[in-house]
View 1 (spheres, rainbow, N blue to C red):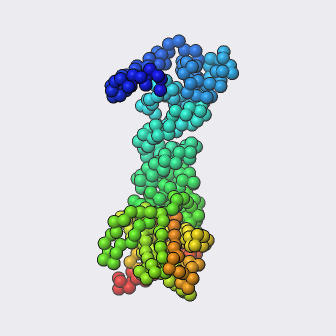
View 2: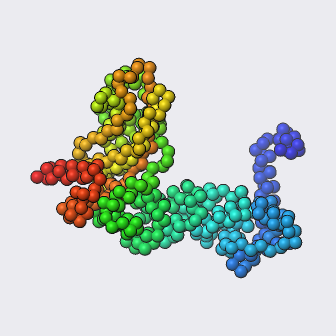
View 3: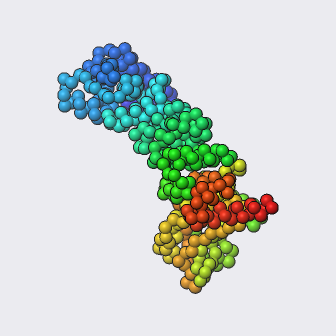
Length: 424
């Protein structure tokens, strides 16, 4: 801080001082903005879409290393062409004078264009957060797919997530009125959109609509092949999933917090009480229990998947991929590929993953640390629901007996058997 300011702050209250400085700062900003808006004494003209914006080299050079380099290397240069929309360029130039964004009349695509231009001009003062209200609040069913296709969107994960979620939340009405636009969803973002869209599917026609849309979008002929294909898509967050203590025997929820680590101290003694955790998903709470399996080896038993919301078609066949990390005696001892798990609704069907740790080698002092990256796959849930809604037809039309993977086939057949038995 300047010496005069430090001296002054020691004599007067800081609140009144800051108020006075804020008024002065605002006045200085308004003076600069007036020079820009009235075009007073310009010494450079920014060209865009055949129109020009009068500006001042010193202001632009102070905010942009691109302009600084242009003006210092060619002092007589007084015109610069930018290949962006005029309103985008004008809004960004105004920002360099005043700091505020005048976004009236701008679309989410314009907001992303502004971020692209700011990057090209190396304007570091513009933060993506400044454009978040424009991009996300300005989304509509008519512009969200164009926004999703903007080449700059991938550089801003929070904006990408917001746009994909909007498209997913509006998927059903758009499927009825804007299907051609929905088919333009970029392939790399398809799972992000579907992850949100599947959450809202609540009946047979909606399920059929989503499955057939995916078949058309991916150009895959069979729903069985679509099911296999979706296993290769990115569904997880790329980060360890959160876990919490499992409910007690009385079913009462445990109020402890969530953590990505499941640490079991004194494993041999702890096994007497069968340790368990709930892996927290977006759609389901997955209860996992640790016990002994064949040859006395530790195993992770997938007990159940409890829906977080009722009346959703995905609840009939919860499905997820589990990528485990198990640290024992300071080393990660589990190096197997991710495990796919699926449950049929109201069917007691358990799956387990065996760990390379035996009861015989455990001591009272041994600890176990378990982490998992879990990615729920709602498209597998919907495809299986789609099959189960009219099993007599799909068994032959999809050649389920020969083409459906083992776990999915077992889930579908056991669900059908139980449903048939209960119905009769």
